[in-house]
Length: 479
Image 1 (tube, rainbow, N blue to C red):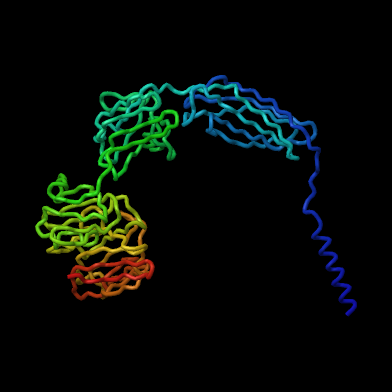
Image 2: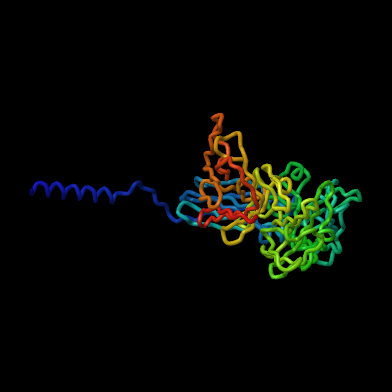
């Protein structure tokens, strides 16, 4: 036993000795004193078209150098930041950096270079170069211009007025959503003169752009959009800060809606349409329909007395369509509305819940009745009402023709998986992500869909509720 304790004691000593040993040894140098000489080789620069050049020499006597940190700053804008390795006792190099034109870069603002040399013991030396003066490109005029000659909403463009601080355009009467470029020179033909400065979007920021960048898709036009406005009437541009503002008459919620007056005819379409601002606190009198009892939207409206409905959605702007042949009002969120504010469904075997319903669906988002918007009725709870009709589906032995799916946007992308939900109220199967096997043996079809689990015929107007909290899909027959 004594021998065992001696062995254990020696082992513990060995372990402790090993643990205390450093992994490696580093030679320690004096603190040192790096010396730096730097010379600005550029006296003047034009923002957006020129570069600055400077030379740097760093030396040490016996403590090796480590890094040289470089920052090029104009006003509050850091336009370049770099750190280079500087091994040995002497480092010398020449640097050149382009100076872009950006916000908060006034005329005569110096282009400053901040240099920090550090040796391997952490001793630093700082030098600032501020002998280079920057000049802004001449911006004495400004035009709101269409991005292409074929872009109609802006006509041939509009010259802005200089108010002493900003460029302003008034009384525009533009649509509530437009694309534009800001150009120092515009032409009477509605073309942008790219030989002079042009403002557009680059890397998500309002920036000076070139024709080559715009043509290649690296830069894009400026999008101004606010569906709470009736129109865009003013645009203001601050050439110093690059801030762009726009405004117009704020849309007011409707208290009355005449489908033949307030909704406009659409060329080549069988419906009338407009964007309408609704407020759930305000009841709306509907005129122009043949029979409001079957014409009002069953998800976004509640029928009150006579020809009055109460709006059920959130306050805001909505797409409103009237289908004269079906005598039905379609209400849906704006086309760019996405989950979790709304869901969209599409598929086959369904149609709009009109007075004389018929199957209109057909996988897609191009035509009314081909899809339906699902209103958010509670957090993570979505509802749509549709005419459902099921029948024989020759592709499967037991599954019917009714087949649909929920999407997070008005288009293909972001979708729910039917197999994750319990189906309540109808013989519907929620398919998992692997899909079903067809009669001919092919697999993978209907992956994630909601499909009738019977070939027995049924039809009717149903309210379908998708509850992500309970993971259920509930079907309630209305008629």
